[in-house]
Amino acid sequence: MAGKRFSSSISGYNKNEVDSYLKNVFDDFEQKLVEKDGEINKLLGQLKDLSQKYEDIKIKEDQIELEKEKISKALIRADETYAQIINDAKKEAKIETESLEKRAEMQREKIVDIKKELLELREAAYLMIDKYKKTIDEINQEVDIAFEEEVEDSESADDIKVAEEEESFEYVEYKITDDAEEIEAEEEQ
Image (cartoon, rainbow, N blue to C red; front, side):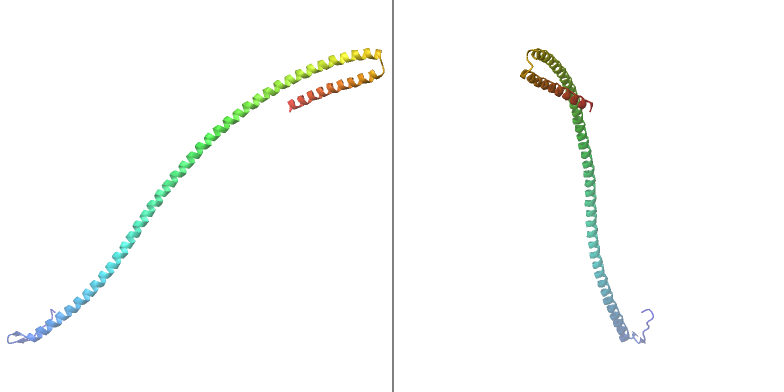
């Protein structure tokens, strides 16, 4: 526009040339305006698309942040729960251990008491065995005396009967002695 020159006429510039030029300039300007409006509309469409994409991304980002926060809270809760479970398990194990130790101690005490009772029973058994041995010895002496008297009196059927009784007493004495030996063997074990 700056380099445009018009021809002159009597009253100034040629009106038709100026009008034609201005019309061309205006048409060019209109065309450029339409083009610019098209570009602006295109850019506005792109801006709208980008804004929508930005909003979508922003929503996704917010969702991801919420998910991260939820996961973080869940991990914290899981860690706290884990710590609590471990703590509770340790407490239960300690209580159970103490309980088992108490029961074991009670069982040890019972075993000691049972051993004492066994020793007392053994002593009583030995005393009984000694008493029975003495009684058997006395009976054997009486039987021997009675046997001798009987032998002198009669040596027939009565002799056989006394011999059977004597064998019976020997068996009782043998049995008592055998039982005492078994008790001693169990004590040694």
